[in-house]
Image (cartoon, rainbow, N blue to C red; front, side, top):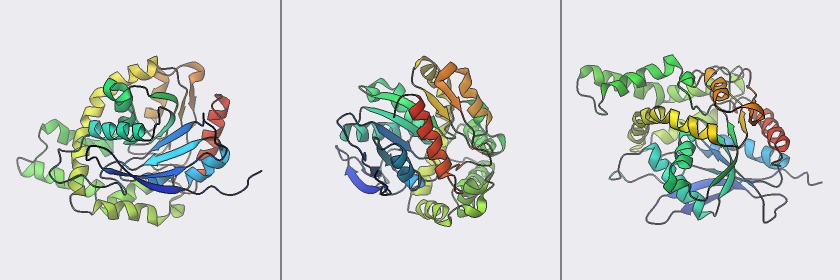
Length: 319
């Protein structure tokens, strides 16, 4: 029996047609074969593939046949930044980049782990015909990856919804300028980032400070705060597409594991329960992470989450 702890390799893949250079983390199958399955791990805001730094080795130990891939989206982590002259960032452009990335790696079938922003990126990818050709999802693991209005925490999302309702990305008066400044302060500052790691987390003292410190540091790069505001503004279009994505999930056949930080103030627990409206019977496993907040992996819960995922995939005959 191989007891060596798997190590993560890091890569930079330059996409064609002057696309970005995607930074990604990978662990190759420990028992490779031509049919080795893939688990794609998609990060959220304000993090990157760094959030899977502990989970991936644990998963590789439990799922030795799997290839594990975790890319950084443009404007996140260590993927190259878009040019200042590039069009505004949107979730559709992130989905397009992800499609190109998967095809460049010849990945056509995969299980997916989604968190936060990773959820709308994946759902756009799989419901856009021009992007989803020849792609097959074998299983979905959603860790605070929202798909329902029931999951939008009122206090967290209220300022953003007020901004969306204004109908203008750019502030037009003093009140809108103040609102935009408040949003920037709440989500794009060090204390705003740390809040997302700590809020609702019963193990705050175990959260590694380098995690939120890295996220906050990368947000300070030239132009990144504006790119993140572009995505925050565009998130309203994800909410508009929820019914379409729900219909797609309802018609799909892959199994779904909902493993949600129960205390998340951003994507609240009713969003986890809402998956039961569209995923019926044995397709659905709801397994909340008690005592966890938004970043359910942080605070020493990586082993617990790896066990959940391994158990789920094995029970579904996928490992």
